[in-house]
Amino acid sequence: MKKQIKVLLLAEFLIAIGLGMLGPFYAIYIENLTKDSNLIGYSYAAFWFTVGIFSPVIGKLADRKDKRVFLLIGGFLAFFVSILYGLINNLYQLIFVEVINGVATACFNPAYRALTADITTKNKRGFEYGLLDSVSYMTYGLAAILATVIFNLFGFVFLFVSSGLFQLASSIVISRKIKFR
Image 1: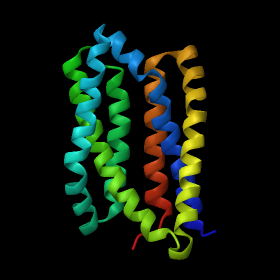
Image 2: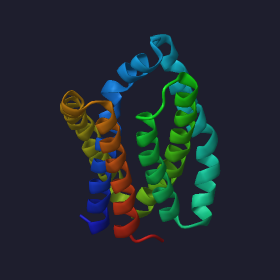
Image 3: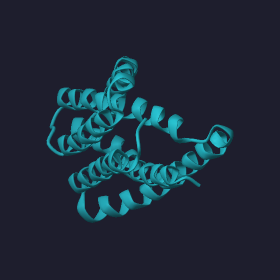
Image 4: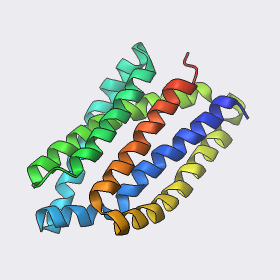
């Protein structure tokens, strides 16, 4: 297996831990924040609409520029969003933070996918993508367990900071260890 695939596996592990830690507690966090579980969908929608709008635009920029820049911007913004989760106190701030989170994802994902396509071996691409997916899915399960422990011991703020640090670490690993074409 190529060294760069191993680096991608490490990066996939880090990003999945970071993202997976938020999933189990996001709804509880929103309900505690707004006292209305009906509002969860609005913040979720703000995130996905932002990702959908910005992904093609930022992906096109990543094709023209150094993909590392977009991976780092995405990782830094994801870390910043994780910090902001601990500071917001109303739905409008949450929606604004989810828009930033959507931009972070739109920076990271197209650059990451393009990089993955460049690195994987043409005749082994299915297996290598499957391996990356396997690491991701299993790590999401591990992240849920880790998040439960962190949340119960330290609460939301520490959970958010930990999540952001893993996401930032993923971007740094990719940008420093992968050779770009």
